[in-house]
Length: 449
Image (tube, rainbow, N blue to C red; front, side, top):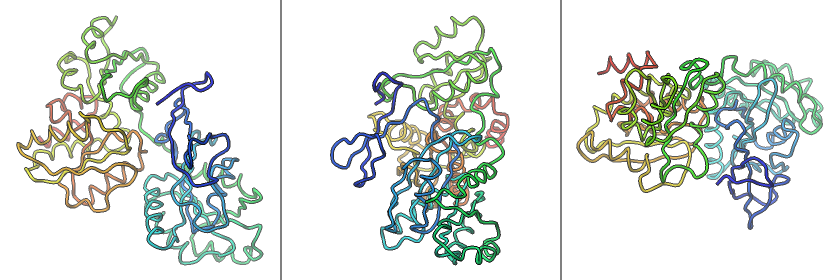
């Protein structure tokens, strides 16, 4: 729960189990093997940062490179191969790119059953990576392993920077460099995490490799003009986090302010009074999906209406594809399997939206029982073909790259996919109105009927 520490701004406290010696400087220890990480809630969310992943074989120096880039001991370094067992995420500002997250990964040449699990987690990181740094150990050189890894990264259309690390310890890299570059099909940057050689050049290559277009579509910047009123409906119930707004609500408020519009926040029980008290008609009403039905009834038809989840669907994924997923609900039959996927883990309430409400509404729509399965966190099931529908959360904790990957997996498996907000609006007969601000998605819905 957010709290104030020493009178400073609010911090989000999370407690994580760590191995001995893996405590960053300044982080207090709470109990044996437990560490308190403090994330300032006013910083850019990880899901909105450029994701830079570091990949390579064990002991190639991935953790050392993370430390060299951040100029602090962010990752545990050891000469023992396999020290990094799980992906480690480190946020920083990398100018002129701005906020980024660096991801340290386990070596993709790990061994044994546990090694296979580590490799899977590293491969999962690739699905959310915007720029990849592939390390080549100068003491080993380019082998079939590096050639295969470079191919995997390129197949995912990820810009890749290949760096030859440990040049301070290798005597013959100059002789082999031209050959290795020919084999890999691109130039190698010579670096040393130990001495700092080439790190500045590596940063410049990251800046050049970063996607030129905006990483994410604006949330509401194209829906409001300077001076417009935008009314945000935020229910405060048992599922609402104490003392704060959830991430999509925070982000929408920030986006409205950045575009010189005026944000008015109210509960669904005060919406009618709020609309009546405004000096001019609002341009748009944005609601939490769970209050869609009530908000739609109380919002005049000449005011645009949508939800936080639909806006997130457009920013993080493909709204048209998710609308197609909603229309596929009419093809569901009792007994069909439905996957409900959540991008983060959270405490489930008695009336949880993903565990209780959506299953109840879907079963009402098909007039029978469905078989539900739930999947949470950064991973995603490898086999989707047994499901008739995938219902995904708003993905506020995932970046666009990861969400598009999940959509592509569903499409390849020929399984329709929809997100919470789009589905709820569809099941309550409100989706046509909720898509008025999004012509392409609206046209698809009309086409599908």
